[in-house]
Length: 222
Ligand code: DHB
Ligand code: MG
Image (cartoon, rainbow, N blue to C red; front, side, top):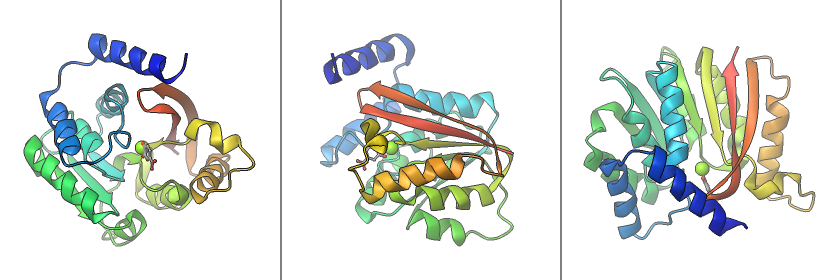
């Protein structure tokens, strides 16, 4: 009762609760056709959680670190009002090229600003008068999450929601023998979130499903 079951239950959830979404379907198909892996996207039910958090809170300005194929980007754009804006960034040129193809095909290019570059560099170089973001999704290289958190907090307002993907990594965060930079970075992230003076509240949820065993952290800015 492991991965096969988790995938079957995710399929069941998707069939019952997640409406058909031809644009996101097309994004997955195009990504696979280009030969990129499937496991780097968030799952459809996870994308729905992001979209619901955005809608529930009336978020209009979104910052995303780690675009990959722009699957989550497009899912978030679909629930934005016409004056919404998503700044998304990706460190790998092959990924941003793919993302741009998927964004163009989605019909949401007018809401999405997709940039190539290391997220820390892109965020540092934003003009100082850039309005704060309402919703932030951190999904880039895990070793840099502590640095990304600090930079994102500087671009937040009171009430900004920050969601961080892949913070559990099949419980490797608890494995003392695992000293990979990504895992060390996640442990440092948890330490940074703990008692952070700029964070009003924070939690993390373990998740199992079609993408394996991982988890989200959620924070609300003070
Ligand atoms: C990896 C990165 C992700 O953001 C994800 O959701 C799953 C896997 C990875 O780098 O392996
Ligand atoms: Mg991820």
